[in-house]
Image (cartoon, rainbow, N blue to C red; front, side, top):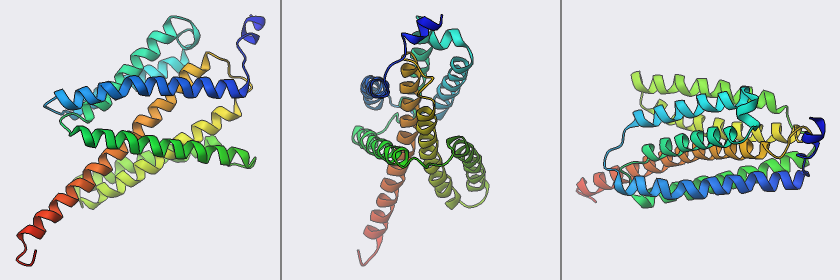
Length: 238
């Protein structure tokens, strides 16, 4: 058994290349689905998004805790493939009934942010003195709790708390991504080639969360611009 696992170890460079390749493949297959759902879906429903995301995270938890589902073919491919489609459809249902230009802008912005975070992780790792990634992940998890609190405050108190919730959500998603990359780097000596599938998919999940945050920001900016334009037209001095 030990010899079988030894055959699965690969170099750090190959591991990173395989992981990023899987992420790019997943993203390449996801973008057309989002485009089609944006074009042909006439009704948006946040309930579909919540159901898909909840199912995806439950399945991801199962993958992490069940060794056979995590490593044994074809169960690992079936589990991660199902989880992938749930995440993709969840994002697709979130961008339903939206102009295609807005969706593609959000995809591009999220990809740019994602790339910048990876570059930042590279410099953090190169510094050899980065913070404990597990503490960063715990801090990000606590921040997500604050997001819920801010959303509740925005629902029942002042709507401006929604902007605070969006800012906290964006920052904590980026913090989660950084901590995940650092944790993976710390465990490179025990990771094997089949782990690249799961790690590439988790990177895709991080990207979709960045995409959701970017999409909300773009929509809020467009809404603010439309409101200001209407006010300007209504003004006698406009």
